[in-house]
Image 1 (cartoon, rainbow, N blue to C red):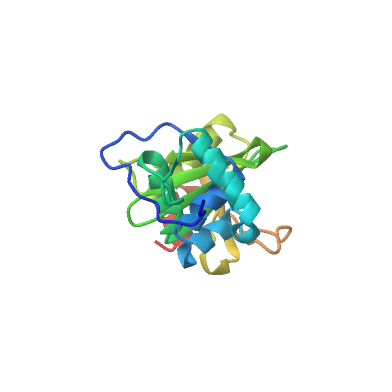
Image 2 (cartoon, rainbow, N blue to C red; image 1 turned 90 degrees about the horizontal axis):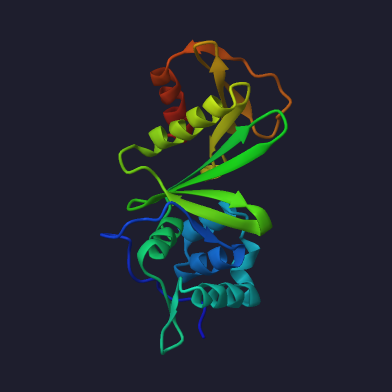
Length: 220
């Protein structure tokens, strides 16, 4: 069976589940279906660059997807995907923007990767055993608004925590720190390669002002 082929089908007209789980070998296989600069940028964001050239890894990913009905092996040996899985594939292999959000508490860090293509915008969260969960971004919000929603919800649940957000394109080295400051917000800009450097905070911000900073760091 050939592990590299064209993904067919979309999620148009179909409901997107709350979340779809993928193993890392499965994601590597999906990325290989439409390999190009955008897919390789997604692989870099997911730390799967080497796996794209690992034939045994791609075979394992294809086998797993077919076994659980997430892909179909065609008579010619090609692999096809449809529905929500095709939407995830399209987002990953046509992505124009990758934004990483780190959700911080005193003793933990959780991550969310926002992957945005012209047609689909998805969120990916890493979970146990190198697995990832993919979710559709809210259709009634812009990607920047969806990013802010995630940060705001995290800080509602963890008022003493914080969040960072940064654009992964072009090896951007600056990240935005967001946290609560009394009834409002505080933000600051820091270098990703100098995490211990002091950050000058901008305090007393409204939701709209925080959104302006988020759009800026995303280069919207």
